[in-house]
Image (cartoon, rainbow, N blue to C red; front, side, top):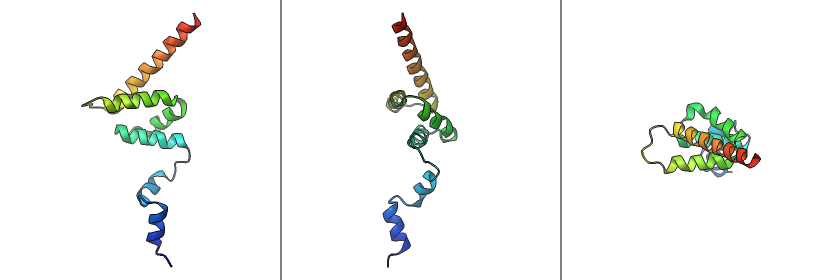
Length: 101
């Protein structure tokens, strides 16, 4: 017979800490938004990042994420991320407007 600790460690190699944290996450975009909030150090606004992960194209989020990770000595990664994301969205809107002409 196996010990319960052995069964848990096989099922969740990282332990129950991550299980408790992710037990209410049922969709991929929720996990992505939560991980983004943790990476940016802005966990108090995790619902914002989850909503962005649901509604914003993933390419925009990845571009802004890589921009922030490449920037040295940033005070507020969350602010820089939102600034870059707004720039990317505005740039897309400008290119779509030019195509209509």
